[in-house]
Structure formats: C-alpha cells, structure tokens
Picture 1 (tube, each protein chain N blue to C red):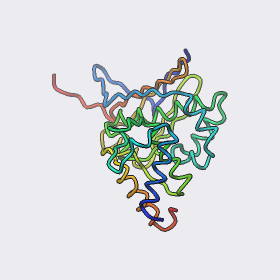
Picture 2 (picture 1 turned 60 degrees about the vertical axis):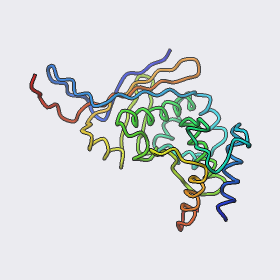
Picture 3 (picture 1 turned 180 degrees about the vertical axis):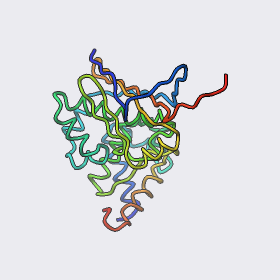
Picture 4 (picture 1 turned 30 degrees about the vertical axis):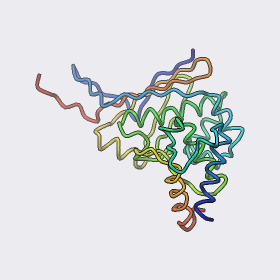
Amino acid sequence: MKSGVKSGMKSPHLCGPCIPVRGLGLDVVAVERFERWLALYARSELALVFAEAELAHCLGRANPSQALAVAFATKEAVGKTLGTGLADFDWWEVEALPGDLGLAVQLHGRARTVAQSRGVGTLIADWCAWEGYVLVQVLALAATCEPTDT
Amino acid sequence: MSQTMYLATLTDILVEMGIAADSLTPETRLRADLQLDSTETVEVALQIKRRLGVNIKLEARQDFTLAQVDALIANAAAVPGSA
C-alpha cells in the first residue's frame, strides 16, 4: 500500500479544544478506467475534467493513470466534503496534485467560492492505493475557529 | 442537427459502454435506471464532446433522463462557438 499524507490550501491552525471540521469526503475509483482514458482520449479532451497544470503534473508522474485516478477521486471527495457534489462547479475547478508523500488541493473559481461560503479555509487530503484502486479522503477545516459556549 | 440525432448518438455511446439498447428510452435516467457512476457519467460527456463537439455537464442535483441530456446537447450546440 502506498500512501500520502497532507497538504491543503494552507496549513491548518488548530486552537485548543476546538476541532473546526466542516466536512469529510471519501471517494474510491478504479485505476484501470484512467488507463483506458489515457489510451482513448487526447489531452485536449481530458481538459473537460482536469486543469492544465493538473494534467501536466499527473502525466509527468511515474504512474500517470494512478495519478489521474487520485486527481479524479479528489474532485469527487471535495464535492462530498463541501456537501454540494459537483453540481455547483466544474471538475477542473478542483485541482489535485498527487505526490509520493502527499496530495495538494487547490480550489479555483466557483469551487473556491462554494468553500468560502461554507466557511472552509483549509482542505487536508490524503490518498492510498491498493489492488488497482485508489482511495482519497478530504477533510475540510473552518477558515476561522470560533469559540463556542460549553 | 435534430434532437433525434443527438438521442441516437447518445444511445450509441451508451450501447458502446455495454448498456443494452432495449433498456434505453427517452425517459431512462442516467443514475436511477442505468446506474452510471461518476467516471461513467464523465465518459458520456467526453464522448459527446468527441462526437458532437459540445461541452455539457452531467453532474447536477437532478438525475437526467436521456431526453434531458438530448436537450442539454441541443442547447449547447445552439450557443455560438460551443459546437
């Protein structure tokens, strides 16, 4: 099993007992589908789903189909984390850059707007792979940690 | 291009993805009836882009019927520069 831990839009700042979790999203996809996409579709066609920088990053990885699978699953997981699915923004507005030790996620355009409207300031993403599948988990943390009465 | 032709293309795409032609009607829904998952739904959009030259987004809160997808294609094709 190969896994990565990590990074969101910025480092989370956790204060005391406050756990500013806004959401959690998980997604699993089969890597084989992305092997097929790479064989079948031109880069210009894949741009319907993946941002240019994301495509360049994934196609430069040692295992491009696995990297694309992680990127795709991240988009789904972010949609679940925000509670909107992909209905309110386009695929390429969630940009995922999987690495050996982590998974960086950047939101753009309407995805960023949705996250801000829900008070999300940080996304922490992680992935692992096993037997032809990848699992991505995304945790959304609040932009600000507001003390609550207990 | 008529809407009927879009529906025929959509049917071809789904049949090539392994769905039985006799299970496809204009009222067939992508998720509830065909059980398409997210990668399969995107693949339908990729094939529509390749064959018809239009970009459509099938990720929505509603579960589209084939007739509704046909209408989405027609609307996208009617926009200058999209087809």
